[in-house]
Image 1 (tube, rainbow, N blue to C red):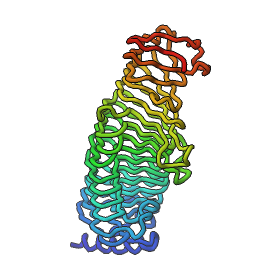
Image 2 (cartoon, one colour):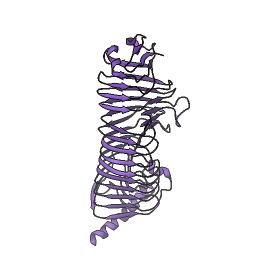
Image 3 (cartoon, rainbow, N blue to C red):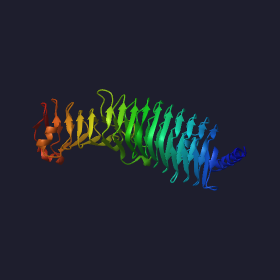
Length: 423
């Protein structure tokens, strides 16, 4: 009883401190003015108030929590941007260079605009081993890391069940590193990952029943290895720039290795109003019959006429199927690396700019006529054209592009009755 009484006093004092510093409240808040390292375990804490977190660490303190239940039971944020800008109302919040260690903790959020874990500010870090995160209301991420903060998780379970509630949200220089993840997301517009920061996930299985798999916004980065991810709406990966701030500038990056990726509708890669590199190696893809592999087109973001997409697709030891669609203001470069087999048409509508580079071990089977700005082979043209099976279709190239100098403006017969010829 004495220990519990002392903890209650500490909680009350910490709540006042939190209110003074953040103009909000927390059930349990610790700052760096007292002990630099604090440890608590085997306690259930709940927050019910508006803009009230369950746990808050700040000002360089290190807090370790073990076998805790941390419940944000009620209390939506008064301002939606509070959670985005400073993490207020999250079940757990770390900022101002503080460190939070979570061991076998269960976190729940049943409030709108209330993330499970929020980490913000340079030097702020969350380490979590075997956490379980459950989100049941709108606009709440399982993990939200931003403003240069970092989170490292292993053996994590994340479930979300409402609108715009991704499992992992990295923005404004935030970094997320995850090893072994599981969970389901059932709300609309709730991808597994949304990144304008940096997200690396190795191992695990997740499903998004009412959304796509992941979004890379602007210069964001996502790296996936040894995962099985499934998405059931819209497309597989949204690669775009929403144009709302300078932080979204730069070239995005998506890397997937040794994984299984499956979707139910749309193209696997949807690229608009951005430039992005996609690197693939030994990935098993599944998607709807006759759906494109990629659409690189102007969409709903950016300035009309200038909001096309630019995709560089680098592929190694990979089988791919599906057309690559490019509109008039978009571009694609497809680098078919070692041991790549591809079946599909590239720029079949003769609109945008498409470039193909073929390794000596790659193979291309045409599904329709393809229109290329240039095509280059690792060895001679005579050997390179043997890597293409036309199925009666043609590949057209621009004779005036210096990259096609080896082709000499000539027409070359392809296996299957088609030809490689000039526009």
